[in-house]
Amino acid sequence: METSPWLWIGFNAFVVVLLALDLGVFHRRPHQVSVREALITSSGYVALALAFNAGVYWFMGAQKGLEFTTGYLIEWSLSLDNIFVIAMIFGHFAVPPAYQHRVLFWGILGALVMRATLIFAGTALIQQFHWTIYLFGAFLLFTGFKMLMAADAEPDLANNRLLNFVRRHVRMTDTYEGAHFFVRRNGVLLATPMLLVLVMVEATDLMFALDSVPAIFAVTSDPFIVYTSNVFAILGLRSLYFALAGIIHRFAYLKYGLSLVLVFIGTKMVLIDVWKVPTALALGVTATLIAGSVVLSLIKTRSDNQAAASRAPQPDRIAVQEGSAD
Image (spheres, rainbow, N blue to C red):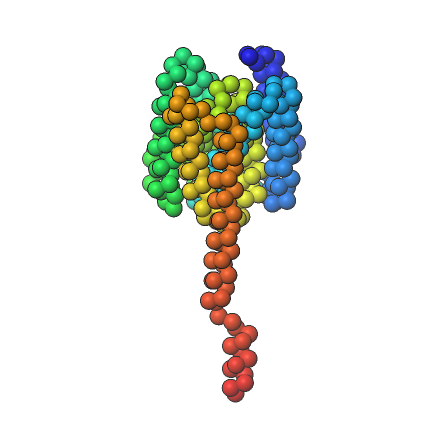
């Protein structure tokens, strides 16, 4: 069943209103986003996604509703890996906390455009050439195994080719100029380091989009479900970053869980004409892999912290012993 154009228009208008409120009202002045504010905002976006999901169940049927739930969970979980890289980028460039939200806002805006382009291109390819779904599946299998083998590796930002290209071809200031991406000095337009950060955030999301967009086609080929689940996952990414940035180091096994999700989804796509994995089963496997990796990560980091604390010197006890010796 083809989705009404008015539904597309209404959904995109709703997204525009959300973005306008975000930038024009809630973050009109640059400020450091607190964990409490981030958790409230993130919970709000999750609540909106669940409310929209309920509407899909009600108006489009249980199967479409389940497809949205699964697609949203896949996109949301894969966006967690994006948070690791964003945290590294902000740390590498020493982005002041008050300006991080502005970078993420424009980064997410670009991400929405890129995701929409990839989704409609992918939908057209699969509808015209069914065999392309095998290519998507093989790509996800390759990406999943590659991520699994390099789960502990960190990107080399200092020698990044894209950054070096921008530095060679764009005149830049040496320091940040508030939240500006460009400033004018003596009639010359100069970029600021904020532009470099934005370029890296956009490039990072493009790489993650190449993984996550094909992944959802393993669940549904309905472009409206694919698009809306992607949008809701991306909209909550900024607040999720601020909520988790301080404890992201505790998710030691999350990348392993995400890589296994990609391998599972890639296998599902490759076998789609042999055995179509039920959507409910795909949802259960994805949720189990993500939840399991998070729980194991928290257990590991907690035990590591306890072991480190037990090995640390006990100054008070040492002082008492020295005093008694005197």
